[in-house]
Image 1: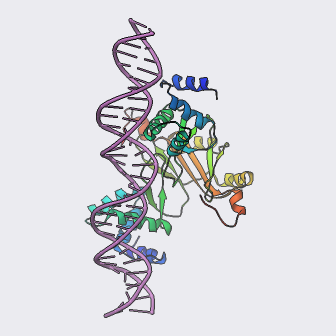
Image 2 (image 1 turned 60 degrees about the vertical axis):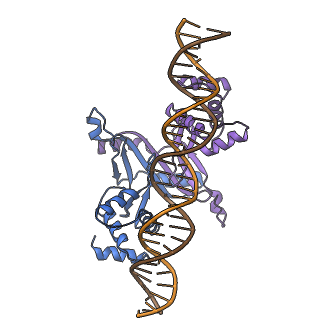
Image 3 (image 1 turned 180 degrees about the horizontal axis):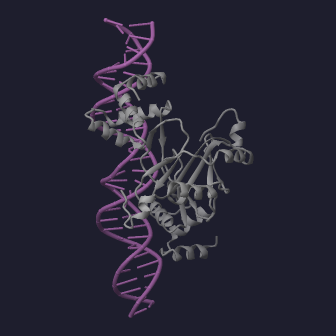
Length: 147
Length: 147
DNA sequence: TCATAGATGCGAATGGTTTGCATTTGCTAT
DNA sequence: ATAGCAAATGCAAACCATTCGCATCTATGA
């Protein structure tokens, strides 16, 4: 994404345009990976930015609040992960061997949700699905490598 | 569950039969609620048991390891929750207003999983589904109460 | 009954995340 | 362009669920 667009996005959200925000959104929007706050911090430090870890957390909070970024909590992972919000509904496939997280862009729950609303009386606003297993690479390798 | 059955269950799992284990399993198997380690600790203390919080954690670890209990991590909850493993596959409906967690015993993903395996090359071993929304009680009350 | 592996208590450590407070910076109205 | 103000940042300390080290105790099998 061009820098001007990032700045527009930040300001449209009612946030002040600061260099760290631009960098953080730039980082997240430029990768398919889910990154933790600490990972983002280290990548920015590596780029010679003198940012503070609490600024990273506070910035991410703001970006989640304004829906520019999404926070994801994978089961059994201590750290929260962040991804740029591309407004494409998706879920994750998580390899229990190499810890790779692969997004899936088909959702089998849309029809089901309506049925569930009727049966439960709940008004459903969101859902989360995660599949756990072993990716094709890890199935091949006999010696399971974990990172 | 009768106490003898609990003890059998503990010993069949290769664990030593100790009073705290019996109490913890008893507590969890006697409720539909999901309890945190701290909640379990407080309930036992309230029963005049002089248990230590780290013992609760260690006991729960063992019980999860031996599949007597399941650990559940709800999105955005800091504390892990524990439930007695009744060997009934289920998911959760979570009220974003009153925080109630309601199990759902129908799973819409079984057929889908197979398709996903074929498409992704993943070997899927487990999945997790959570629905978020507002329960019928909270939809009625205009003033949303959160706990 | 004894030996021993496993369980427990206690306190301290861990690690991700949050917060208080003083300082700095970006934005808006003038 | 500038002043004023709210928002953002840096830093250190706090938070809080969970884990760990180590000394002591206890259940279990021989």
